[in-house]
Length: 282
Figure 1 (cartoon, one colour):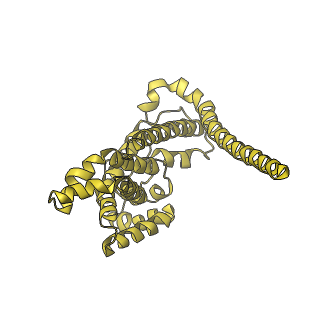
Figure 2: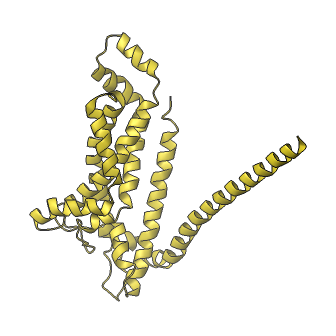
Figure 3: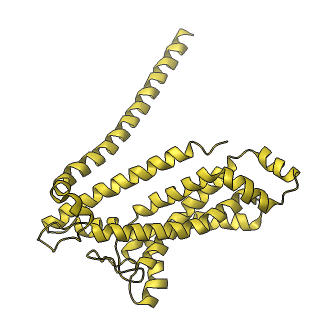
């Protein structure tokens, strides 16, 4: 009996040591990424100041310039993509939650599963064939469509899961009052789940913000200015993709500044998602 108790104690300590080591390794990786981004980008940010958010990137081998047009393009493309993705994903999430036994809900679930498993570079290539080639130019609209498709499964799945957290008694109370299903969903369940819908939208935004492959074929890599919705555009991740391996020192430094901004925006969105998700469960 003592041997058995000793064995259990040893195994418990080994399990605790393994899990603690894995947790510390995870924290170390996250801290290392943030620290390296800050160290590499600090000279550029300190040298440019507010100009970083206003000026366009400098010429190859010249001055640093800034990220002004790229920030505008990123905001427009991500916002438009998440907006369209929300207009599609939220109703689809409601359908999968409230009509889960129907063939349409099962088909939507299968379609979202397939989209989420398709590599994002394939999504970008498909949008390139469908939109960019007929328009004969890359554009912010094409980039937004590619990001919309990428974010759509996350928005729909989070909406479904947050609605599923609402107890069945609320639905039974609404139906007992004679409310039709659509009115019970739109006037009771969705308002109760407003934080869950907001969480879904922010989660889609966080996903879209860091994507590079979909916009690689669709945006056009226009870093010096924002040319509108039907003109070539860019994102922070796309600038990093092109500038980081560049032989020009000013472009490489500017890429590190973009890395720090992208990391900071991702952390802010992730923190907002976590804070909102705390209030979703009933």
